[in-house]
Image (cartoon, rainbow, N blue to C red; front, side):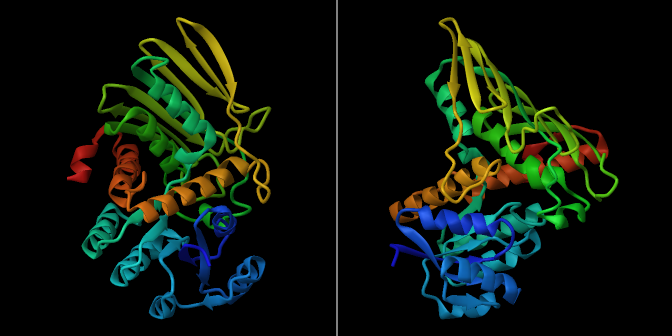
Length: 344
């Protein structure tokens, strides 16, 4: 038996990556799974050898026998499941987006705080190997103090074939993908004081926006642009790479397609390959994301055993979720939105 025993709720498209990741995590593993769809429950249970299977989360919590829960369901169920975990004093990981509304997210943080349990949002993009490499360059001081950045994810990849529900909601790219890119901007350039956003729907077969451009004012004085698109056709498809440009007082860095990190300063230019590892269970081009799933889950296990706070704790991720809400507000009003007002 692993040191930390976990239960997974939700056996859909992405949860399979999480199950593979848990198999690789040192000191933790999944001992029970739950899904309302018996067929998905059987598929995942058989694939990963999980005997304890539930179609009702309440029954699973009542039976207990696990140290944490990984909630990999769609957004509308998050609050009820996190509050259920809090009621049973079971530490919880919750898939992004955090909740349907910022008020729901606040209530989830409050419930876990009152229960004295950790809550982590599965915000895995900042754990990608190339993103972590950029963070190390900034921490080294190699480009001085950053004053401008661009975080770009532009693709024509068909994400709807694997996740058809993404085409149905009135919100799409900011809530599903931009949330990751906004979190990367926060992670690398500090929290955001205000933003202005514009959106567009290019694909007529979906209900939400598939293009967004967001201008961020960071609290440290830097300015950045987050631009995301699932309507961009290029000669070489970059999915699922986030491309980054950051200018600093002493130099600049560029994370370009193909996972190459270029750093330029007074000492010259250095190019470094920062490609993710292709884990045995992963597949291209998803391996960048799949590796980060394992990384954040290992981070959770390490923090839970040490009693330390996770990097994407619920209280911290409220700041990322507020950027999503502010982006939609700004796109609708065509006005700049102050983030502090949303978090007050």
